[in-house]
Image 1: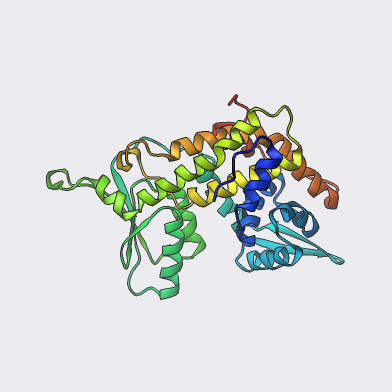
Image 2: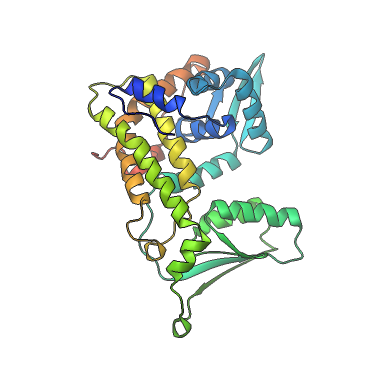
Length: 313
């Protein structure tokens, strides 16, 4: 469902929140990645509860979610009396860094025609194979067989991080290759369309633009934006974009259908984000300072989002 057409930011937010159910753990990952990581990457539990309360998450759901994220290696907890603070682990920062490049950066149009292939020997354990396959698919790889995954424009640094984190450097092979021109048959674009379910992904991007286009109009007609509303709207934007973007294999233009809608979604997100980020950061900082008393300055990489936040929309 999408929010109905509204005339004010408060109304748009109310409609958007009413139209969606949030997975607590996924939303907390969004809040940590978009809002907390650039401000030091740690938050007292009470601050986190206050930040996600507008999305319908109660204290029990937040406690359960951060416990699971800690068990999965995203967070580590520290206690001070009855208070608990949660901080991103090095692994958590690494995962957010990879997601940062996918969510906030535009896709590259140049491609030299070479593919990257990851081969896992059949002797490797089932659990290791499944974990590697899952993480590489998050990076846009597609399974070409039980032991082979491929991508035409892989981020090799991200692949290396995954392999090292899973301690599989000595067990797998990473190869490159390109199409044999004399034996060319069907177009690789046909293969890509079927292998990555691009039609379904295109529909999701179109729905995203249809969903958040009205938000841009509301913001353009708003003289001021309250920090709390800016944070909610920015979180809704990035949470929705993240769910689409992290399923996008980010293929080269040469393999995509014409008029690929991710470009419109990215441009819309960039303009909306620039209209919200300062007030949203003000709300996040106030929530974190309420418990910690001090929050470090924004990390410089924050301003690199969407091609540079200090640029005019």
